[in-house]
Length: 211
Ligand SMILES: [Fe+2]
Ligand SMILES: [Fe+2]
Image (tube, rainbow, N blue to C red; front, side, top):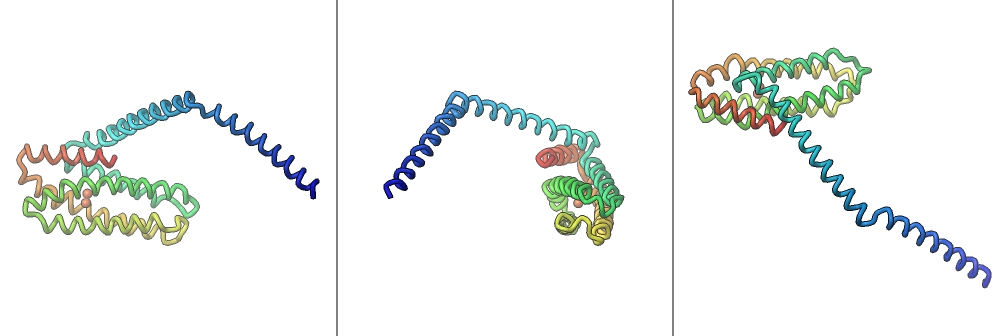
């Protein structure tokens, strides 16, 4: 009994001494001086990351803005989106990683595009008594999100993947054609130069937020 107690006491004291050594080591590794330097480095890193992100956004939206007026910006985005669909349609069921990356790219491009249209162009259409077209187009954006949801959730090796992409591409192409050939030209014709320039500025501003 006495021996067991002695052993326990000795082993406990040896654990205690290890713990105390370890904890004094930890204190020196995370002293105030060093942690201040770590925080400083983290802040500098975050500032660089913010600046890099702003640069990336400016470059991305700059490319769209170079397309010209708001309707040309949106048409250029339609074309770029259809190219992503074509890349997806060229994949096979073994390229699941590539499919995942392309679906992410498609999701980002369509989210940004929908944001520009839903926050600027469709509200301006409604104000110009084109509410019916704006409502039809915005309802279709709901189905765009449904296709994106399905493709993101779907097994990328599934035999149903490519038929779903093909169906989605057809829907996007018809939607883009309605905008480019009917709704946008008719609306643009009725705009003054100043109104047209204002809509271009706003589309680029909303695009920058989502870039
Ligand atoms: Fe649209
Ligand atoms: Fe569009």
